[in-house]
Image (cartoon, rainbow, N blue to C red; front, side):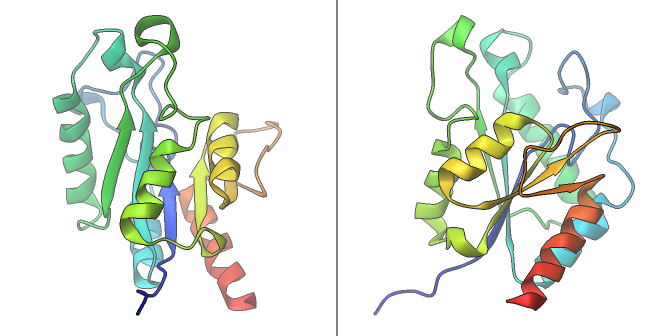
Length: 178
């Protein structure tokens, strides 16, 4: 007997779950979670989605911070979102510092590992990110994509949204149509 497939929303971190910093987000004191993020996560959770963070953390390869900093930010997000996030995958690599890595987006290894571990159905799943590489990783893993775009930015995703709350509403509307 096979287990039922689960549906998932893969979430980029910086620029989606928190405001992006030009010099990397690793200092809890600088963490800013935009309005609507906890609400969006709870809406998706209530609709039965696994919520898995997939984030490039090249600052580790560059020696700017450690994995512990990444986990501390994740824990802060868990507190704010009522522990809505199911898992965290991050790539500590950077091509110029640690060499090429399939886990670093636009590679899709982080998503593929989660798909295997949680028996995720890519056809029912989504990737939300704010960069072209997030959209590529999502497409490479066979999931639909939503690009968080800023003013006048061209979307590379299947859908575009101004923020995570808008993206969550797109997903829930799409689910109704299925």
